[in-house]
Amino acid sequence: MTLLTQPPADAGQEYGSDQVRPKTVETKLDGGDSVSGASRDKPLNHYASLHDVEVDSRPVSAVLSPSAVSKASTSDAGALPPTRVFDGLIKKDDGTYRAVYLRNPLQVLSAGQKAFDDTINGGGSGITVIDGKKVRITDVKPVDAPSGVAAQGDKAVALNPRTVRLSQTSVKDAAEIIDSMRANGWAGLPIDVVRMPDGGLTTIDNTRVVASGHAGIDLQAVIHPFDEPLPDQTQIDRFTTRKGVPSTWGDAISLRIGKQAAAYRNRYPMGSPWTGWDGN
Image 1 (cartoon, one colour):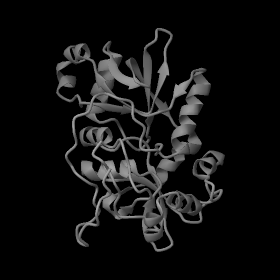
Image 2: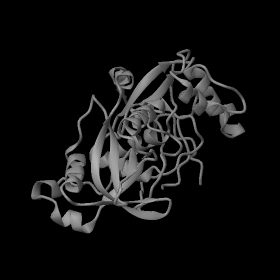
Image 3: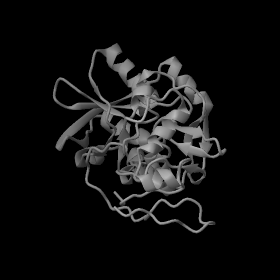
């Protein structure tokens, strides 16, 4: 992986090469960035408890099977995106999987996302890979956030990704998310962004910031004051390192930056305007 060099002062934020290779279907995690942390886990855990099922909460990128594409309606066929990212999978009794996605109360599905889901729910199937094994998706369901989580959407704002600094030296597995965002717009619930002591914004969740920059769309974010307490133990555990246990969003972002290479964390203690990405 090559670390990106500093862009000219007037060039804005650099995200690396735009030459995104077509990818085979493979389950990928979002570069260590969950979809808004606890805001993503809580509704999935709530759904699992409510329906007495086990949710594999690793985000996956799926494609439609050739037979599903051939059976799509004329209107849906024209809108189908090449891939669709889901927030989790549930194994069904017949060995196939249900794909689930978080339903953001502030957003509606794009025409492409709806066409993709309708094609599967109409009898087609999607394909993805879990731990190296190809599996079939035979239905798609939304997951609504519980009221305490959904309220976070009220604070969500649209931001140009080039105005948000990054907190990791590199990201990975961005290509599929870029393809999805180009076809369907923003994916998932808002990310968490921290207002730093110097007044700038630095993201907790890096990969989707990179992806939205390459896709040419605004990102959706919840902006947290530096001294705002973390909401629950899940977030505290998420950002705990050998260097400390966080109690605020400021602690969390500082510990994340503190985990990076010494050259990075010493030069960019408030976050960096660029990161490394190998194009995958």
